[in-house]
Structures are given as C-alpha cells and as structure tokens.
Amino acid sequence: MKLIERTMYLDKLKNVIGTPDIKVITGVRRCGKSKLLEAFKTYLDSEYANANIIHINYNLSKFEDLKEYHALNEYIQDRYISDAENFVLIDEIQMCPDFELTINSLHASEQYDIYITGSNAFLLSSDLATLFTGRTFEIKVYPFSFREFLTYYELNDVYSAFDRYLTEGGMAGSYLYRDREAKYDYIEDVFNTLILRDIRQKYKIRNPVLMDRIVDFLMDNISNLSSARNIANALTNNQDKINHKTVSNYLEYLCNAFAFYKVRRYDIKGKKYLSTNDKYYLSDHTFRYAKLGTKNLDYGRVLENIVAIELLRRKYEVYVGVLYKKEIDFVAIKRDEKIYIQVSDNISSPDTFQREVDPLLKIKDAYPKILIARTHHKTYQYEGIQIIDIGNWLADKE
Image 1 (cartoon, helix red, strand yellow):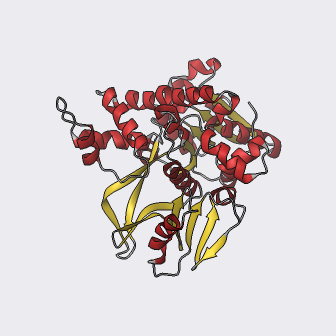
Image 2 (cartoon, rainbow, N blue to C red):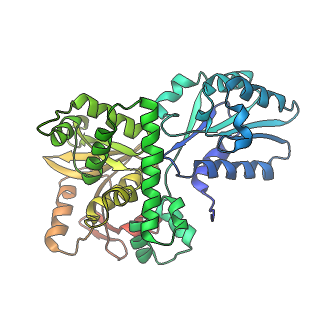
Image 3 (cartoon, rainbow, N blue to C red):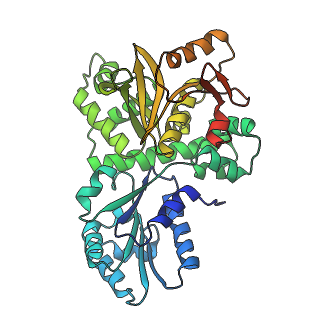
C-alpha cells in the first residue's frame, strides 16, 4: 500500500519525545495508528543515533509468546541498554491481558519512553486515567482528511477531487480497491467485524440486533437532533418495547469506539450548554454508504458530517448552536477563538442562500461567521459572512 507521511500526527509525537508521559495513540479501527507508529520508529532510527527501540507488534505471530504481561515485562527489561535512549513502542497492546500492569511498572522505573496503540474499544480515552497511574498524552488519529486524500492521489483540482472524496472518504485501506462496490465492501467489513465486534466483546452486548438497529438509525439521521429516549421510541414496535437506558449505554459504547462522535448543543445567547438532544456524526462518512447504500446520498447531511470531523481533527471543541429557536450547524471553539459555521450542499437558489445566512446574521457578537458550501468559487463576503467552497476550506486553500 502507498504510504504518505501524516505530518500532523507525526509532529505531535516528535514534540513529546523525552517527556515522562505514556503516549497513547487512539482512533477508530483502520485509521492508520499502526502505520503512524511505524513511521515514528523510522524517524527515531534516522534521527537518534543512541536510540534503543523495543518495538512489539501483536499483529505479528513472532510476538505470540508475549501475550502475558510478565513475559512482556521480561522481554522489554532484557532489551534495556543503560547508556542508550530506550524507546518502547507497542502496537495493539490490548492483545496482552493486564497490559497496564507492565506499562505502569515500566513507567515507574523512569527508564523508558513509552508509546502504545490499541483497539479503540479496549483503550478508551475515558479509561486512560484509570488504567495508567502515570500521566498520559493522547494522540487522537482520524481517517484521512481531504488534504491527505489530495496528497495520496497527487491531485491538484480541488473541486473535482472533493467530489471523489465525497464518495471515497478517508478509510485509506479502501483505496487499494478499484471497484466502488469493492471499496464499500471493505469499509462495511471494517465497521461490522472490527468496530462492532470490539464493542460486543468488551461490553458483552446481550442484544446485538438492537445495536445494529441503533447504528442504522444514527446513520440514517446524521445531522438530526437525537436522544436516547426518542431513538428508543422510534425503534419500539408493538412486540418489543426498548428501554431508553439501554439505548443510552449503546450510544456511549459506539462513541467510545470512535464509530460516532457526539456533538452537544450550545445556547449562543445564554452562553450555556444544553443537556437535551445531541447530534451524532460518523468518524468517516463512507460508513454510511457502506451500510445503507448510495441510492439516497443526501449530500447536505454528508457535507455536515465531513465538516464536523474536520473541526474535531483541527482540535476545536464542536457544538450545535441554538439562537432564538434557530439552529447554527456548528459553534467551533478553541481557547479564545470561536467560529460560527453553516453547512449547505447547494446555495445557488436565493431562497436556500437566505435560509442559510439568516441564523448567522442574527448573531450579534464579532466572532467570524462562515457559510461552507459546494460553490466551486473563491471565497467571498456577504454582510460580514465568509462564503467558502468546502473543498477550499478542507484543503486550507484560503
């Protein structure tokens, strides 16, 4: 498979070399965590003459005997070199039961710089503080961005390239397949056999059929406000009443595994977060095509999903804005920075354009306001609102 350097993530790893943190690489299955760790190992080999790199990849059969934490600990200790910089890189660490006992012991010795990846459902952001007694530094990895897609395929025409990205998405493993159906078969297999299987295994799911129905509901309702209660009501039939608490648990599991990301609502006027009704976005929009088909693509919803994930990728806190009973697609916050964003597929109709800009015009503060759409034009201004083509925005061209 062709490889590109994922500079954004690699730079984050480079910047924490030598810190006492346990570095943990997280993200949805098959988003490139293992390849990132390999790229980091290559960097260490080339830049650190005194590096002693102890690299364990549990996907390889030669490390089968290390799937017991005492054996893992002994293997690493035996390879320690006192006058070297000792790096420990472990891929798919969850395949060693009680791995945290070894990692905590190695960390306490203050002799190793530790980097690990693991299955999304078994190495959760919410579990890191509990698993590890030392401080952790999390590197969140996402599927390929549009910028990475352009680099991979060596494309220059942003507008036509975005039309491809819209259907092909960011799961780079699918790029090896020429036929579109084969691509979606691969993507569906990743979702079903890796993501959902991990969830069922970790949480001992008693009702996998319900889990599948919730997944289909969320995919079909991307960009719609949802709650555990209204999902339970929608899925309940005459024979089977569904408990909203069970639905709430399953939603949490899906988000823990990075299959979906939950976006809460934010009251712009009252400057407070709202506790009812959230939106759920897929980690990669092509999971929706692979699971539900491509007959009714509903590009408006898909574009909103792409923007939501890109904002998370760019390290923004992301919320759904509420102002005078109108909705702003996204309020993106990063420290003192705040951006209000509307997303639309096509704003060529005057009525559609006005409908999209009206909520932004009602916001009275001075923070930037953006309407992102498929304009195929350079950025222009309308009453203080930036109108930006989505391909240009994703490629960071303007």
